[in-house]
Figure (cartoon, rainbow, N blue to C red):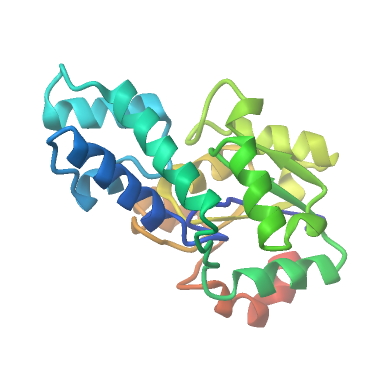
Length: 219
Protein backbone atom coordinates (compact mmCIF):
# COMPACT_ATOMS: atom_id res chain seq x y z
CA UNK A 1 0.00 0.00 0.00
CA UNK A 2 1.36 3.40 -1.02
CA UNK A 3 1.55 5.94 1.81
CA UNK A 4 3.64 8.69 0.23
CA UNK A 5 3.75 10.49 -3.12
CA UNK A 6 6.89 12.34 -4.21
CA UNK A 7 6.94 14.72 -7.16
CA UNK A 8 9.75 16.09 -9.25
CA UNK A 9 9.26 19.80 -9.97
CA UNK A 10 10.65 21.20 -13.23
CA UNK A 11 8.98 19.61 -16.23
CA UNK A 12 6.73 17.51 -13.99
CA UNK A 13 4.67 19.97 -11.96
CA UNK A 14 5.65 23.10 -13.88
CA UNK A 15 6.37 23.74 -17.54
CA UNK A 16 9.54 25.65 -16.64
CA UNK A 17 11.96 23.94 -19.02
CA UNK A 18 11.13 26.35 -21.85
CA UNK A 19 11.80 29.29 -19.52
CA UNK A 20 15.23 27.88 -18.72
CA UNK A 21 15.94 27.21 -22.40
CA UNK A 22 15.15 30.78 -23.42
CA UNK A 23 17.43 32.09 -20.67
CA UNK A 24 20.24 29.74 -21.72
CA UNK A 25 19.73 30.75 -25.35
CA UNK A 26 19.93 34.47 -24.52
CA UNK A 27 22.99 34.04 -22.29
CA UNK A 28 24.74 32.01 -24.97
CA UNK A 29 23.84 34.54 -27.68
CA UNK A 30 25.54 37.26 -25.62
CA UNK A 31 28.67 35.07 -25.84
CA UNK A 32 28.29 34.65 -29.60
CA UNK A 33 27.03 31.07 -29.27
CA UNK A 34 23.98 29.43 -30.84
CA UNK A 35 22.46 27.41 -28.00
CA UNK A 36 20.01 25.03 -29.65
CA UNK A 37 17.07 23.25 -28.06
CA UNK A 38 18.68 19.88 -28.85
CA UNK A 39 21.71 20.88 -26.79
CA UNK A 40 19.47 22.04 -23.95
CA UNK A 41 17.55 18.76 -24.06
CA UNK A 42 20.75 16.78 -23.50
CA UNK A 43 21.19 18.49 -20.15
CA UNK A 44 17.65 18.03 -18.84
CA UNK A 45 17.50 16.12 -15.56
CA UNK A 46 21.26 15.85 -15.03
CA UNK A 47 23.78 17.72 -12.90
CA UNK A 48 25.24 21.08 -13.92
CA UNK A 49 28.67 19.44 -14.17
CA UNK A 50 27.42 16.85 -16.63
CA UNK A 51 25.54 19.50 -18.61
CA UNK A 52 28.70 21.59 -18.82
CA UNK A 53 30.52 18.61 -20.34
CA UNK A 54 27.93 18.49 -23.14
CA UNK A 55 28.26 22.24 -23.68
CA UNK A 56 32.06 22.09 -23.91
CA UNK A 57 31.90 19.12 -26.25
CA UNK A 58 29.59 21.15 -28.47
CA UNK A 59 31.23 24.59 -28.40
CA UNK A 60 34.81 23.71 -27.44
CA UNK A 61 36.72 23.05 -24.24
CA UNK A 62 37.55 26.75 -23.80
CA UNK A 63 33.88 27.70 -23.45
CA UNK A 64 33.32 29.65 -20.23
CA UNK A 65 30.50 27.49 -18.89
CA UNK A 66 30.73 29.13 -15.46
CA UNK A 67 29.87 32.50 -17.03
CA UNK A 68 27.10 30.89 -19.09
CA UNK A 69 25.55 29.35 -15.98
CA UNK A 70 25.83 32.58 -13.96
CA UNK A 71 24.28 34.68 -16.70
CA UNK A 72 21.48 32.17 -17.23
CA UNK A 73 20.78 32.26 -13.49
CA UNK A 74 20.60 36.08 -13.64
CA UNK A 75 18.14 35.96 -16.53
CA UNK A 76 15.90 33.46 -14.74
CA UNK A 77 15.98 35.62 -11.61
CA UNK A 78 15.02 38.66 -13.70
CA UNK A 79 12.15 36.73 -15.27
CA UNK A 80 10.81 35.72 -11.85
CA UNK A 81 11.25 39.20 -10.36
CA UNK A 82 9.25 40.67 -13.24
CA UNK A 83 6.42 38.35 -12.28
CA UNK A 84 6.90 35.97 -15.17
CA UNK A 85 4.36 33.19 -15.49
CA UNK A 86 5.07 29.78 -13.96
CA UNK A 87 2.74 27.51 -15.93
CA UNK A 88 1.56 24.18 -14.57
CA UNK A 89 1.89 21.02 -16.60
CA UNK A 90 -1.60 19.80 -17.63
CA UNK A 91 -3.45 18.31 -14.67
CA UNK A 92 -0.51 18.69 -12.27
CA UNK A 93 -2.13 21.03 -9.75
CA UNK A 94 -5.25 18.90 -9.62
CA UNK A 95 -3.20 15.71 -9.14
CA UNK A 96 -1.33 17.16 -6.16
CA UNK A 97 -4.62 18.13 -4.53
CA UNK A 98 -6.14 14.72 -5.32
CA UNK A 99 -3.36 12.76 -3.62
CA UNK A 100 -3.48 15.14 -0.66
CA UNK A 101 -7.21 14.56 -0.27
CA UNK A 102 -6.61 10.81 -0.37
CA UNK A 103 -4.49 11.18 2.77
CA UNK A 104 -1.06 10.74 1.20
CA UNK A 105 2.03 12.38 2.62
CA UNK A 106 3.48 14.53 -0.16
CA UNK A 107 7.11 15.32 -0.86
CA UNK A 108 9.01 17.18 -3.55
CA UNK A 109 12.41 16.02 -4.81
CA UNK A 110 14.04 18.53 -7.15
CA UNK A 111 17.46 19.09 -8.69
CA UNK A 112 16.75 22.82 -8.53
CA UNK A 113 17.89 25.21 -5.78
CA UNK A 114 15.76 25.70 -2.67
CA UNK A 115 15.25 29.41 -3.36
CA UNK A 116 13.47 28.76 -6.64
CA UNK A 117 11.55 25.74 -5.34
CA UNK A 118 10.13 27.77 -2.47
CA UNK A 119 9.30 30.66 -4.81
CA UNK A 120 7.42 28.43 -7.27
CA UNK A 121 5.47 26.59 -4.59
CA UNK A 122 4.46 29.79 -2.79
CA UNK A 123 3.53 31.69 -5.94
CA UNK A 124 1.39 28.84 -7.26
CA UNK A 125 -0.14 28.06 -3.85
CA UNK A 126 1.14 24.47 -3.68
CA UNK A 127 3.40 24.85 -0.64
CA UNK A 128 0.59 23.91 1.76
CA UNK A 129 0.41 20.40 0.33
CA UNK A 130 4.03 19.33 0.87
CA UNK A 131 5.37 17.90 4.12
CA UNK A 132 9.00 17.72 2.92
CA UNK A 133 11.08 19.39 0.23
CA UNK A 134 14.44 18.04 -0.91
CA UNK A 135 16.64 19.94 -3.37
CA UNK A 136 20.13 19.80 -4.84
CA UNK A 137 21.33 21.59 -1.71
CA UNK A 138 20.43 18.57 0.43
CA UNK A 139 22.40 15.95 -1.48
CA UNK A 140 25.88 15.14 -2.73
CA UNK A 141 24.84 13.29 -5.88
CA UNK A 142 22.11 14.40 -8.27
CA UNK A 143 19.78 12.32 -10.43
CA UNK A 144 20.10 9.62 -11.80
CA UNK A 145 21.67 8.83 -8.42
CA UNK A 146 18.78 7.90 -6.06
CA UNK A 147 20.04 10.05 -3.17
CA UNK A 148 17.47 12.84 -3.55
CA UNK A 149 14.60 10.33 -3.41
CA UNK A 150 16.02 8.36 -0.51
CA UNK A 151 16.60 11.60 1.39
CA UNK A 152 13.06 12.70 0.64
CA UNK A 153 11.65 9.41 1.94
CA UNK A 154 13.73 9.74 5.09
CA UNK A 155 12.41 13.25 5.71
CA UNK A 156 8.86 11.94 5.31
CA UNK A 157 9.47 8.90 7.51
CA UNK A 158 8.42 6.70 4.62
CA UNK A 159 9.48 3.26 3.44
CA UNK A 160 10.83 3.75 -0.13
CA UNK A 161 8.87 0.69 -1.23
CA UNK A 162 5.66 2.48 -0.25
CA UNK A 163 6.47 5.67 -2.15
CA UNK A 164 4.95 6.64 -5.50
CA UNK A 165 7.02 8.99 -7.69
CA UNK A 166 6.11 11.18 -10.66
CA UNK A 167 8.95 12.23 -12.96
CA UNK A 168 9.30 13.72 -16.43
CA UNK A 169 12.97 12.95 -17.19
CA UNK A 170 14.86 9.73 -17.84
CA UNK A 171 17.48 10.66 -15.22
CA UNK A 172 14.80 11.41 -12.63
CA UNK A 173 12.76 8.27 -13.28
CA UNK A 174 15.96 6.20 -13.15
CA UNK A 175 16.80 7.75 -9.78
CA UNK A 176 13.37 6.89 -8.38
CA UNK A 177 13.59 3.31 -9.65
CA UNK A 178 17.06 2.90 -8.15
CA UNK A 179 15.56 4.13 -4.86
CA UNK A 180 13.13 1.21 -4.99
CA UNK A 181 10.05 3.39 -5.47
CA UNK A 182 6.94 2.85 -7.60
CA UNK A 183 7.71 5.17 -10.50
CA UNK A 184 5.49 6.85 -13.06
CA UNK A 185 6.97 8.88 -15.89
CA UNK A 186 5.17 11.69 -17.66
CA UNK A 187 7.66 12.52 -20.43
CA UNK A 188 8.22 16.13 -21.27
CA UNK A 189 11.33 16.78 -23.37
CA UNK A 190 12.80 13.27 -23.43
CA UNK A 191 10.95 10.06 -24.17
CA UNK A 192 11.50 7.07 -21.85
CA UNK A 193 14.42 4.77 -22.65
CA UNK A 194 14.23 0.98 -22.64
CA UNK A 195 15.06 0.76 -18.92
CA UNK A 196 12.20 3.09 -18.01
CA UNK A 197 9.76 1.38 -20.37
CA UNK A 198 10.59 -1.96 -18.79
CA UNK A 199 10.52 -0.94 -15.13
CA UNK A 200 8.18 2.06 -14.75
CA UNK A 201 4.82 1.32 -13.14
CA UNK A 202 3.04 3.64 -15.58
CA UNK A 203 3.98 5.98 -18.41
CA UNK A 204 1.45 8.77 -18.95
CA UNK A 205 1.03 11.52 -21.48
CA UNK A 206 -0.16 13.93 -18.78
CA UNK A 207 -1.47 14.08 -15.22
CA UNK A 208 -4.95 14.23 -16.70
CA UNK A 209 -4.77 10.44 -17.06
CA UNK A 210 -3.90 9.86 -13.41
CA UNK A 211 -7.29 10.21 -11.63
CA UNK A 212 -8.75 7.22 -13.49
CA UNK A 213 -5.91 5.05 -12.14
CA UNK A 214 -5.82 6.42 -8.59
CA UNK A 215 -6.85 3.22 -6.85
CA UNK A 216 -4.37 1.10 -8.80
CA UNK A 217 -1.58 3.62 -8.18
CA UNK A 218 -2.11 3.58 -4.42
CA UNK A 219 -2.77 -0.11 -3.84
